[in-house]
Image 1 (cartoon, rainbow, N blue to C red):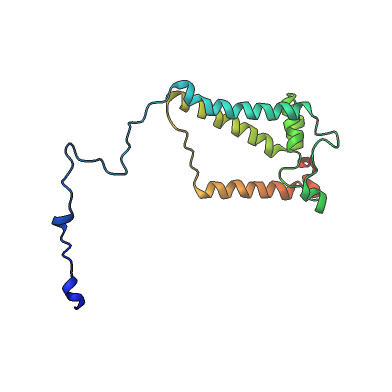
Image 2: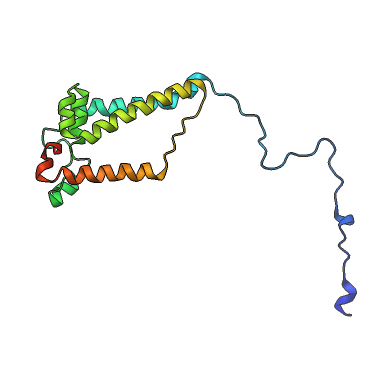
Length: 169
C-alpha cells in the first residue's frame, strides 16, 4: 500500500460548525462593559494622596532639622569630591520652607524653592482638572527639557565657583 491511498479529504465544509445564533460577536479589542464615570471623590483621591505624601515629607523635614549633623546622610558627591550637586541644600531649604523662612530657603537651594513653587502650581492645575473630570496632561517639547537641564547644570557649576558662593548652602 502506498501513502497516496490513505489521503484524507479535509475540506472546510466537513469540519465547520454551524454559525452561532444571535448577534455577531464583538471584536476582541472592544470593551465588554462601557466605562463607568468616576465620582468626584474618586477623581480627587490621587492628587489629594500625593499632596498628603508631600505634606508628610515636609512635616518630617520640618521636625527633624537637617542642619544638625547625624539625622540625614551626606550627599555622596559632596563627600567624595567636595563639589556641591544641584540638590545640595535641598533638605535645608525644605526645612526653611516648612518654617516659613523663604529667605533662608532661597539661600540654601534656590533651585529647589523654584521646584516647590512649580510643584504647587502643577498640583493646583491637577486638582482643578480632576474636579472637572479632565486628565492632567502636560507635555513639554524636548527643547524645554534641555533648557531645564542646562539651567540645572549652570546652577551646579556657578554655585561651586568663588563668585557664586551666594548660591551655595
